Length: 219
Image (cartoon, rainbow, N blue to C red; front, side):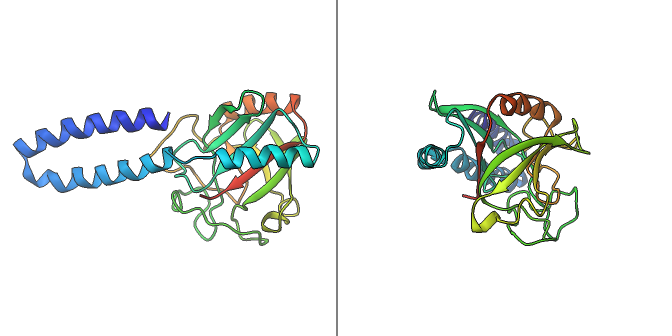
């Protein structure tokens, strides 16, 4: 999806760029800025996660976790792009991808101020997301979105407080189903939150696949 958006943007850039050089030379610096943003996002689209997939499979086998699916979330990717991936171990490919929020940190709740620089912390009351490996546990009731959440058990030093901090997977009405780049996704208090429609799909997957590994990284 990101690559298609990139190609579409490149086409628009050339059309817009040529017309501006003929009609309004002052517009040239603006197109240059747009091209720089496009090139930056292209590099995100080319991130190679193969080592993460390999390690996730080995980790799941060693720790008796789900052997069918695992979830990878890359908070290094701009929040307006899809960066929540469900990876299918059997088919060796990403089967689903979604928009997901991160924590606001010291910024205002619900804003998008850290859309390309997600603040990371394991501390209480930090309102930040934590990185590391989690195990998706019990399905519960949420006050947000479609009223469903999943408990996350942090397995690393970098996310050991996740359960005590009430960091759970849930949906949020404010989250879009589709990519909104260059805009960002509203930021919460550290939970990975997805759209309501996304959560309906994820919920069905997690009801059928227990003890799924969720690995949150920041490339």
